[in-house]
Figure (cartoon, each protein chain N blue to C red):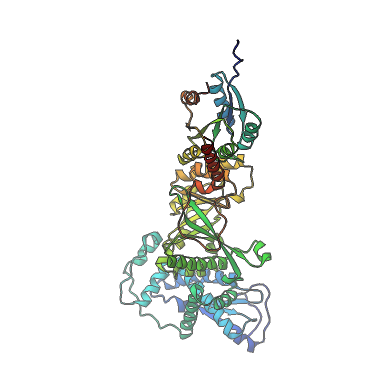
Length: 440
Length: 129
C-alpha cells in the first residue's frame, strides 16, 4: 500500500489509474475469504486455496476499466475503485463479497456445510445432499475432524455481509430504484422498469386449453433492444419480478396460470451474473414457484452432461419445472432428460426455412425428444400449417401469432382448441349451412 | 335414344409427400378414374376452383396451406366434391386432426398408413364409382 506501482501480484482490469497514496486509502477495499469461510477443519487452508482462485476470477470479471485488484496473501484481496466514493466502493465491495460467498458455496458444498455449522455450532454436521456430494467430499462429512472454536467474524466483514444481504433483498422485491442503483454498481445496465412485457398464450393441445403464458421482455430503448447483448442477468431478474407480479394478479383474480420465464444460459454460467438470479428465484414464495417455469435459453449443443446437471441444480426446487430452448441439431437430448428437464423446445422463427424442409425437421426433433422421455414445445409459430404440423408431430406446447397475439397481461387458464384457430372459417361455413337449410 | 357418354370420375389427390402421393395414384387408378395430383393446399384450391372433381383425397399435414384450412376453404367456396381426409401414422399422432377434418367439411377420414382396400371402399361408399 505504500506504493502505487503495480507489483507482480497486482492485476489491472483494463487501464491502471494512478492515485495519490492518501486517496488510495479511501478507494481501497479489502475482501478476506477467511472472514467469509470460518474454516474449522485442519484442511482449512486447502479450502481457502480453492476459494481464492474462484474469488480471484470472479473479481477480475467484475472489475471495470480503471479498477484493479491486488492480492499478496492467500484469501485476501485489495480492490481499488478509483472512480467511486468510499461509500459506493464499500457497497460495491459488499455485493462482490456476497457474490464470492455464493459462488464458492455453489462450487463446493463443503463450504455451505461450514456456513451452516457457523450458525448452529452445537449441531452435528448434516451430510450434504446426495446429488451434490462429490466422492471425495464424503470423507469430510464424517465427524473424524473435530471442529475448532469458531473465530469471531471481523466486524467489517459482518457489515459487508449485512449490506450484501440487504442488496439482495432489494433485488428480490424491493424498490426498483434501489435495485437499479445496486445492479448498476454491480455492472448491470438495465432495470425492470425499462422493459415492456408481453405474454404469449401457450396452447396445451392434449388438454385443450391455454394453461401457460410465455413472458418476453423488450427494452424500451429500440437501439438497446436490437443490441445483441440485451439478454443478461438483469433482464432475467426483471423477468422473474414481472412473473411474480403476474402470478399475484392472477391469483387475486382466482384464475392462476403458469408463467414461463426465459433464463439466459450465460446468466447461469457466469459466476458474476448468477447470484442475483438465484437470489431472485430463492426469494420467491412457494406459491409463486408453483406457477413459475424457467426456460433455459440456448445452452450450447455440445455441453457436457455434468455441466448441464450443474445448471439444472440451480433451478431445481426454485420453480415448478424447467425447460431448455435448443436447436434442431442438438445432438444429446438424452442429457436434458437425465438432468431433469421437463421439455426441450424450438423457436420457429429461428428457422426461416421453406416449410417443406422445416416441418419434417421439426417432426424428427420431436421424435428424438420423445424417445428420451422429454416433452416438446414450439415457440413463435407463424402459420396454421406450422401449428397443425406441430400438433401432428406431438409437440406438447405451442405458441405464436398463429395461436394468439401476445397479451399485455396473462389471462388465466382458458379453453382453447381447433375451433379457435378456424374460427374465421367456421363462421362462413355455419352461414352457408344455414342458407342451405333455408332453401330446403 | 342413346345414353350420353359416361365420363370417368375425376379424383384429386393432395399430399406433399411424393411417395405417398404416387402410391395413392396407383391405388385409385385401378378404379378406372381420372387422377390429378396436387402437392399442397394452395395447388389444390386453385385446381378445385378451375376444374370439377368428384373426390378430393386430402392429407392434413402439409406445408404452406395445410389440409384442415384447405377443406374449410373448399367448403366455404361451395366446392361440391366429396372429400376424404387422410392423416396419422408415423408423422401424425393426433386423432383430433381427423375429427376436425370432419367438422370442417370432410365426408370421410382414413387413417395412415393407408390400407388400399379401405381407401377403395371409402371411395365406393361415397358413390363415385
